[in-house]
Image (cartoon, rainbow, N blue to C red):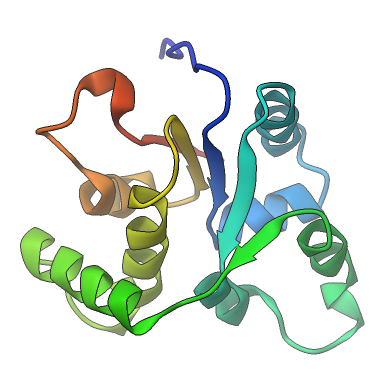
Length: 144
């Protein structure tokens, strides 16, 4: 698959798997991080994602190291409403998709270009879909 050229700035969003892979030193995730840093992109994770990843023990240490270097974005009532609307618009429902919808709602609000690292490109791709936006401005969902 061809990669599209990304402009300066923008955002790199990590879902739970993106965060875990980066914490584990995965070379592909790291390459996306380095590319984001080189272009001056903001690297973020939704606070909701922490629920999926952290368990309160020593095994959390690598994740905490990553979190100390990136931005954790809060979940607000407005973000929760937008996430619910995304679920309604896509026909996805239930707790299985709730955090993905919050990650998608977060990503849709960020400065473009946006790259979203995930292990679930199908569902997140549906949730971030913006057919009315020019292709160059759409969120790039990347499987890690």
